Length: 329
Image 1 (tube, helix red, strand yellow):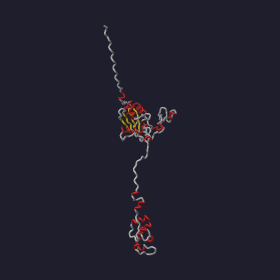
Image 2 (cartoon, rainbow, N blue to C red):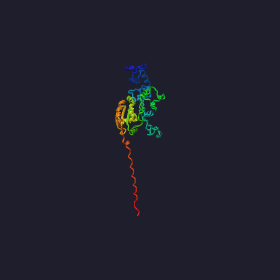
Image 3 (spheres, rainbow, N blue to C red):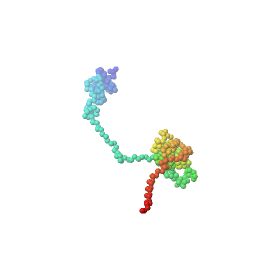
Image 4 (cartoon, rainbow, N blue to C red):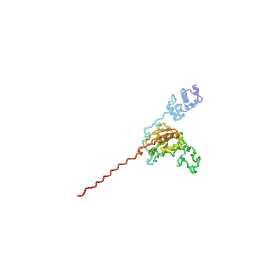
């Protein structure tokens, strides 16, 4: 059967060695018997030489390295890559051809003069009237001295919904939920305590959250109550901040727990700094005023501000000399 497959050029090869070479070449080159016979005849029946001629030098080198067994004909099989070939290809060569390692060095990537750096500006403290997450805020109106009443004043006080004897009707949500900036203390917490001690007034701290609607309810319903405003104006100092502002976060660390509920209203003694009473969530004006009346009748006292400084002792006046009464002799 193998003889039938190995027929080429119209004659039957009788040499079993050549038949074996043909079968090996057919398996390597994936060709038929006629093609293998013609290629082997052209290369003197040298299997390795025929493979080199078919695939080129690289294939011949691979074939030679593989060492085809049973190859008939003379020697002269392709040898593998030598040391010189490897050196030419950038592989293993003589030690003199190896590049020396780069010397270690250090340098500055970007040289900046410290004196030329821009000064770090500390951001201004964030008050309760300029939070970026506030939904119902008109910052341009809140920044005006009149508090958003310029249009009505220019019209003679007869703006939209303004009737003599009745409160002016709010035009939009920013006016409804506007913070009570006109009754809030302007200054830091230390200045708040100092003013409370000097004026003997309780400190009412309101810590709000811009994402809690209860904070907006306090601005719209509680802090706008006229009765509550009268009580606050006589015996209290209102200080309003957001919990994530610098001063608000400092207050929360000192007076509130980590799981505090906002909005928070705290009543503080300006003398000792103690948190006397607190409310969480929305608190109606009537309820808050009822609790604050108990403290309005007994304002905090700071002895160091009430007692006058002791007067320095006055030196005693020197005694007058006694008059001479001796009679003449």
